[in-house]
Image (cartoon, rainbow, N blue to C red):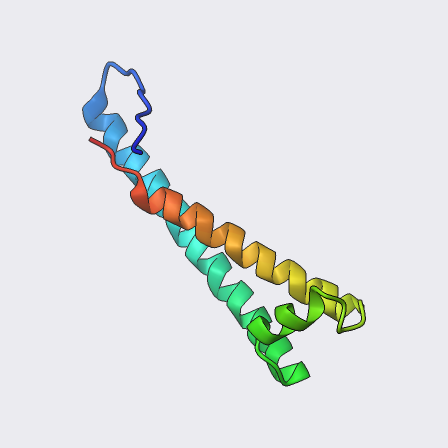
Length: 96
């Protein structure tokens, strides 16, 4: 369900481009963060010879030992999900 946020201003012509620009900057920052996070995940995958999906499947039930690397790997997966969720929210935003 779409929700609406109202911003009141006396000069909408000047404010709209600023809001659009701010949203684009956030999207760019999020995309950069996603790329960095994916690169870190790829590093773990190469280091341990398994995909992130396989790692999570084995880590959650305790099949793998809780090492610092594995905790970091799990944290990166959570970070990626959060960044992608935020990106989706910004992409849906419409400034009219």
